[in-house]
Image (tube, rainbow, N blue to C red; front, top):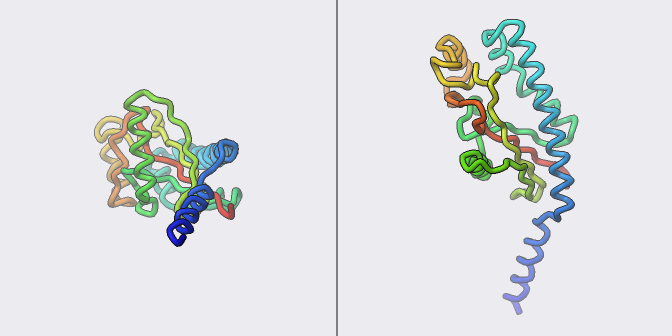
Length: 187
């Protein structure tokens, strides 16, 4: 009887940790909305700085303001917003094991020319977690491209001054830069 109760408890726990297709669709839509709004806010601010003074102005701005912009979006949507990668720039954005698995999954999908779709699941805290890829495009290569090609030595030196452990270079257009990792609170 004791083992039966343990077994039933495991069954009920695993059922409560899964999401219905309807819930996955709802959180996919909401996660997509949040990532698009956050990207738009970060990107528009960064592009303004690039126009005003190029990487010399944009990199210090990103260093001091990107987290506060992300934090404001967290408050707006009542979620935790994280941008992470297997090749981080900011050590405050270190990836958890599951996030590294997701990054690898998206990198393999790119190699296999598969569609990149958001992933929605329950995390170890029992909260809904949304993941979506961050893809490099041409304008990102000024700070994330190949050294000596899109990324100048001068820009790389400035990056290394602010981010001494930077690993976020060497990308090409279309590469997976990392992921959005959104945790929905109070589920």
